[in-house]
Each structure stands twice: as C-alpha cells, then as structure tokens.
Amino acid sequence: MEAAAAGSSPMQWQAEEAWQAYLRQQRSRIGWAQYLRCRPMALLGKAGADDGNRVVMPASALDRINSVLVEYPLMFRVQNAATLEATNCGMLEFGAEEGFVYVPALTMARLGLEEDDLVLMTSTSLPKATSVKLRPHTMDFLGAKDLKRLLEFNVRLNTPCVTVGDTITVAEGGKRYLLDVVEAKPADAVSTLDTDCEVDFATPLDYVQPPAPVPLKVAAAPCQDCAHGSERRFVGVGMRMDGKPVETPPPAPAPAAGSSGKGKSASEHVLRFFGRRGSVAVPPPGAKSAKKMNGEEDKEAKWFTGQKYTL
Image (cartoon, helix red, strand yellow):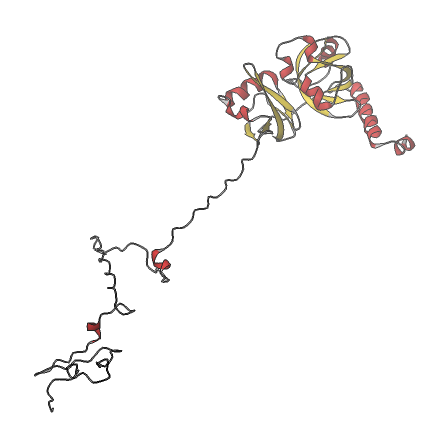
C-alpha cells in the first residue's frame, strides 16, 4: 500500500483518501455519504429551482439518512469525484431517479461537472453566517430597489448556504443578478438559515474607473503695475478696526508733458528760507545760466538780485 502511494500522483492519492473516507462512512452510523450521477436541474422543469443551490436526490437516500445520525436542516457537501473540487448545497426534495442527483447549473459550473459525471454527496453541518461579502457581476444590481429585502427573499427561498468561490443568483421579476461570494465568516462555508448576517458588496465586475479630470489652464491677467516694470506689493483690501469703510485715495495725476523724468515740477526744487526781512531763492539743479545766443551775459537774468544783510 505504501509503495503504491509512493508511486502515485497527489491527485490519485487524494482520490484514494476520499474513497477510504467513503468506506469508513458506510460502516458508521454517524453521517451519510453516497456516490451519485449528476444531472442538470433544468431537466426537471421546476420553475426557479435552477436559481439556488438546492439539490434533488433519490428516495433511497432519504431512507438511509433516516437510519443514521445527521443534523437538520440537511446540508450536503458536493464533490467532483474526478477533480475533488467541492462546495456545499441544501436539500430541495427526494424525487430523483435511483442513482442520480439533480444539481443547479451554477453549482455544476463551479465544480466543472458535465451530465452523468460522478459526484460524492456527504452530509455536513455548517456554522451560521455572521458576515458575507458579495461581488455583483453588473453595476445595475446596486441600483435595484430595496437591496435588503431582495437579498433576504432570495437567500431564504433558494440559498440555504454559501461557500467562498460560489456564484449565487438573485432574481427580481424577470431580471437575474449574479453575485460571487468573496468572503464569509466565521468560515468559508456557512449556513444562511435563521441568522442575522451582515452583507457587504465589493466593486462590481463591470465597473470602469472614470478618467481623471483634465485641469483647465487659465491664463492669468497681466498686472498693470508689472507691465511698467514695477512690482505690485499690496493687492489686498484694507479694513479699519472700527468697521467703517476704508476711503480709497484718489489716483495720482499723470505727469505733465515736458516735465522732468522723475515727475517733479521746477518749484519743488526751490528752497525758501524765511527770514525776518527777506528770502533767498536757490535755483533748481541743472538750470542753465542765462546767456544770450551771441555769448553775452544777460543782465536782466540775474539770480541774486536782493539786498545783502549782515547778521
């Protein structure tokens, strides 16, 4: 036996372990297990039976279950005998032909099953769900009316248990929404019967990230002061402590044509010394001496024509 196990592949070894577990189960009075042939649920023609994860088994399975110790409500582990992929399901009725089990289409797709493939059905017990995270296939599911009542109705009717990796169906009128089971607590396989469960939703599969907005380039208005080569330092609004409006000073008058480059008149350069008897005027800087065109001195244009005083 050890030599055979040493020369076998991991898949063959796991299949041998599953077979030995099945034989031990047959000799025990605790639990139930049986190999059956798989058929699609749609062949029965039962309306809505293909939307959930309940199965239909033969009446002989019920007789065997009644003779052993199993927990209710009935839950079963469905395992593909070839690939050993497994999930969990509930019970719809015992009315299938002998040796066959009818399985919903989504469960068959999950396990990679075809019609008449061999499956191992085993009774099981699952903890009650406390939290489940679902991923809708389409965005329109999130726009359905009253998601809470919609989920409660469909799960209570068609989905007695969920397993991470499964895809469940939620029906609303003529619409069918598909949701992947992403997370489940306190275990990867949980019962949804008679429990208060928190439901969270992951990003839908068809969600498309919107493109990032392109920032608009706004050209700044040129500063009037900057246009003349000077920096405008104070551009805010003045405020008074007493709350009264601030009086805006009138703009400075433009310099007259023909004035000096600094915008000052000739009178601003005159210094006046006010004395008790008279005053002395100082000519503005840069003033030219008054001379006639022929080079002679103009006697009328004399700057200091006042009287002389001694202090």
